[in-house]
Image 1: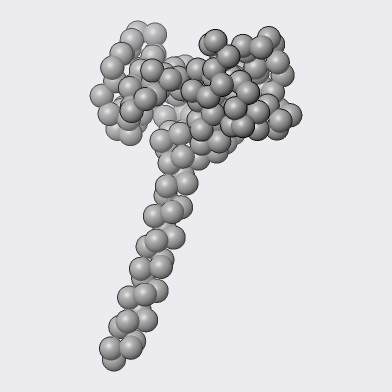
Image 2: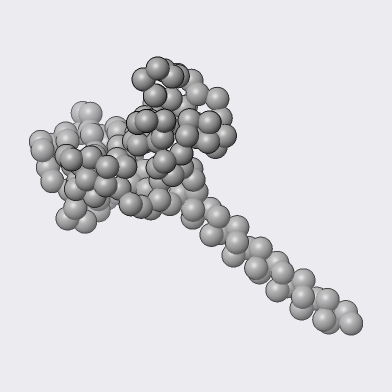
Length: 154
């Protein structure tokens, strides 16, 4: 009986570990590869890897855009801001996973339930801003639903 319980416990522990790892990956999502380049110089391996994906078009050496719904903005040759667009004629449509479990189409209340109390809120224009650790998350809403997420270094 002890052996059966030990085996069950090991199996349950392994399953919980896998679920926790999957949950973490959902929190970081596809956007994690972009966020890891935030605050890095334009010649860093992280930023160089982003450019090498071939999805970015260089507008100038401080601005890159993608038809996959992503915009990169550099300041003084350092990646300072990343914008993800739900749907844009210029930037296209981001279909990957947003950071922190956010999803396009969420209401402001749903976003607040995930990110907490905003540091800036312009309800009339549909804009919320959150400061989390070293990043600022800017959330823009169109017709009451999340349509753009910007992440910048504080």
